[in-house]
Amino acid sequence: MNELLLINASGQDQPGITRAITNVLALCGARVLDIGQAVIHDTLALGILVELRIAASVRAQLLDQIQQATQPLGIQVRFQTITAESYEHWAEQQGKTRHIVTLLARQIDAAMIAELTAVTSRHGLNIDSINRLSGRVPLADLDAGEEQKSSACVEFSVRGMPADLMALRADFMELSARLNIDVAFQRDTVYRRNRRLVCFDMDSTLIEAEVIDELAKAAGVGHLVSEITEAAMRGELDFKQSFAQRMALLKGLDESVLAGIAEQLRFTEGAEKLISSLKKLGYKTAILSGGFNYFGRYIQNKLGIDYVYANELDIVDGKVTGEVKGIVVDGQRKAELLAMLAKQEGIALEQVIAVGDGANDLPMLSVAGLGVAFRAKPLVKASAEHAISNLGLDAILYLLGFRERDKLL
Image (cartoon, rainbow, N blue to C red; front, top):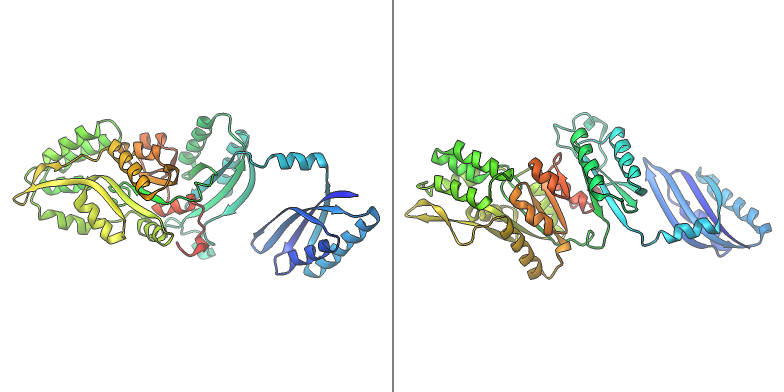
């Protein structure tokens, strides 16, 4: 007779467990229909679904042989017959829409997972697998996470399509704000695993400062420019209009101050680690900034970034004129440059990642395959599909599915 048999093995993980079970199954020509395992703290959970074509009188002997093979290893084995109807229902799930839900925090506790999985369940999403992407944490470090800038990440593979995607994202956003976590929800496609280009905003994204504000401080008009900058970042002012207002206030600034400001720039948490990892993985990187080329090229040389597109300060007789040369890099221009670079690299827009914090970054975040609002203003965070507010820039690697143990990090 034909029987679908599910074999569940559990116990202390060690070499030889899978071999012991499959050696016995091989004797009767069993066909493996599904197999999977997980190891948590050296404890194994192994499942094998097989089709058996053996007589009923032989079945008991086979199960006994499996028990005898695994007993010396300290492994407990359970057997369950699967009905044809149950198997067909399982097989029909192949090709169904899948998503990846990524939970990011300094440290993860049970309440975070309980509330996140309550949201996925409420929206009809079934969890197929759960994986920890972050590294193992020594006991001594568990209570020092914030000071040591630790990071924790758990990835959930879920099946199904939410009836109301906007409502799901709103629930995740509410959860993020209340629990100080970040939650990303991505369609699990081939493009997710094959991103090739990452485009960054510069000010308050790759670096902690808004350079135009630093220039304004040197010109003695810091408070005036900062107010305009904040309004523009919140989306309350048109970028080109606000940019012209701020540039006019810089008129007469001595060119000599640029080098000093550049040398004092501090990279955002995780920026150097992220760029280094992306380079090792063969990604191309770009700065698309409403800031200035002088500082973009400085950062390019420091981090090894491939492309820089920003505004060119107009300087005459060693003084800033209050204007820029060429096309102003605003939000729309950023989106155009991103599309141009994708075409130049011969890749689809779905293979591009865009990262930014301001309202003028929203156009490029919306056209990229993965748009990430990084430590963004509320309007930007609410408008972007993905947001990272609690970890450093290197958390983007988790969104790509990379594990801490990969050693590229």
